[in-house]
Length: 73
Image (cartoon, rainbow, N blue to C red; front, top):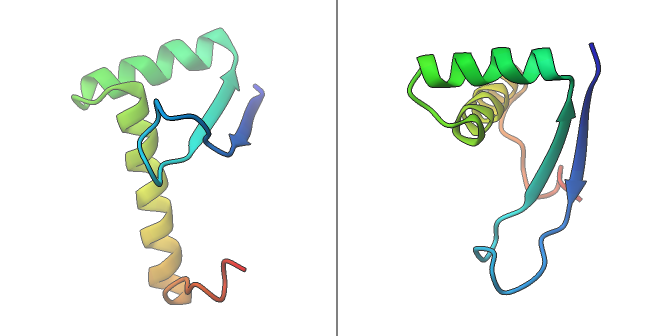
């Protein structure tokens, strides 16, 4: 199984200000399973991904402390 994240800086007026774009490539089987899980939990695939990323950040900060602006530089 291969999962590839491609991070792109958002550009153009069509996107919401302050938002970033994340493109993900995955095999068809993983895509279909993830789509099933997202639907089961009442979320879109994008909503499910955001939920999981937010959960990851919360768990990281719980264990290691808040991520500060200085950490992001």
